[in-house]
Length: 366
Image (cartoon, rainbow, N blue to C red; front, side):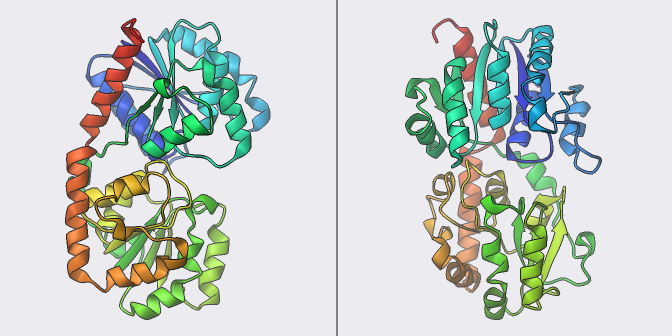
């Protein structure tokens, strides 16, 4: 078999890591692989996934899209790349790649598979996906919640949907060392609470920053680490400054060593409003760290063995403080979290499931 994997961009993120791991392992299994990014090549310092592909002799193609007006004209360039690659299956990831790849695949010989990663609340995107849904031979959803969303809100045929959760690379997890204060640009060691992710509305980070005083008054030895960047960064920093907490809440910017930061922390803070199946939560669980999350899609599935780690936004702060003040409970939660990932969400399991879907689509029985 041969595959073309198309994604909106290759900056580090959950969907992007999934695609890169899938491309690499499919090539290792003897399949032909092509990777295409709609966006330009990531900037230096954020190109770790590109370097990972290059290390396995996979050199991505870039359409260089940066503006909406470039989107439809790029359809011809994408179709030309796909015609040259002549894949058996084209797998797209994320909204923009799903839409453009569907438009570029009219009367194409390959099987087109969509990748749905999140129950996106934006209605315009619902309409766009409904309009293109018949172009997809199959759709892979990252969680049961996303599968339900695809069926009920987007109108996809349930028989055309398969749930394949993300997989965690334990070799990578276990070889990472905890980050030190010096490595994070900080002057001294403290007990840490960590948030890792984008700084935007979806991720709900203001739940941490607006309530930082209450959190840190209840936990006087702790500091908060916020690793990531995004459009809300300056607003979040102002919220911390207004409370005079610049010395206890540390904005680290984008970090390529997210696993090491989580390893150095007592637990992961994850107040996201909506998700699919967040890699950051899965990595924290694999490390053996507890999570304090809001009830977003995918979270209930990951943490159903220990739902005490999930709290509505109105109760989130009190739950965080309650857990952090219960050391034995934190230890038990961390151990059970790691066991769940080891048993159900290994990277090899994810790759196997994708390969089974592709083989089925090409068998003639689909």
